[in-house]
Length: 397
Ligand SMILES: [Fe+2]
Image: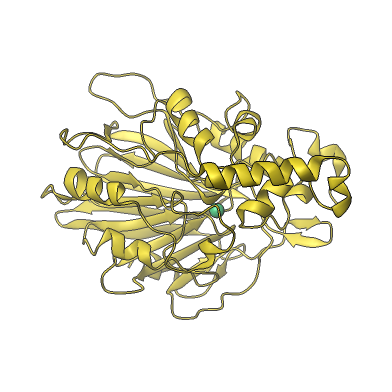
């Protein structure tokens, strides 16, 4: 059972409330309204939920924001040559574990922080205000203003849960609180590029459609911007992709259209995603030749209770490691550890550490620029803590 005394430290929701959160707009909205039994209709909560759900479906999604493509630098931000970037996904749950992750991120004082999506349960404005935007919520980057630096201290990607309320609060919040114009962006320096993609917008409000494997995809404006403002240049800077949804997975459903939307560009190096609530690292893999040959890093363990600590079901996805440790139990369900990734860029060198909520570093990988890309090396790997499926060096091959 959850220990209530520990919850009070800074958790705003108990982990029990987040267990088994459905990937469905109507059911997620039920949780927002605390509708769990037929009797809730007698107390009016059920009717409020039903009315709001129907209103959301009829009103539809907020407009997709796009850049003016007559400006070839639109959506491209410049970061320093030496800079640290913290990444976490599925963080905005309000659980005590999310706030432990927050504390560890702040302890490392990253210049920039990026959230890879999912503000629970449905990304309504009240939920953004209470679980993401407050001073004690999502950790903001400490990037100081400097000449020639246009990068923002914090960014947020779009996820399926933001879109379950139509994405209105998401688009409003990133503009007003982060100064972020659109749900996709490129943050670069002379050596590296980070590209954030919007895979959440295609999530439909109508139950079940997201379950179609080809439904999750990039918007045409996102693809057009990527091709014109990012990929059209002839430089060889390696690209780190960020998105909410996974292109492939050894454990769960795959979203095969995403790779096709990106194309097979040799500059793609690593792809960080969330959505799956776990930590896992893959060697180079592509689900089809029209998509990138890329190394996946699943970091969807930012704030949700990690319920699925099972073995992988697909053997051929080049999974190298994953975390299947049990950190405790919530209502008799075994749960794992939450965590995040820290990217430390220093000119030609990039070191990535994967940190858990306790502050322990589980893996460190290092990449060094070469004339035609980057060369990787695993610096440390804690074999006592993580489950190794293949030789650890396959992670960077
Ligand atoms: Fe998600």
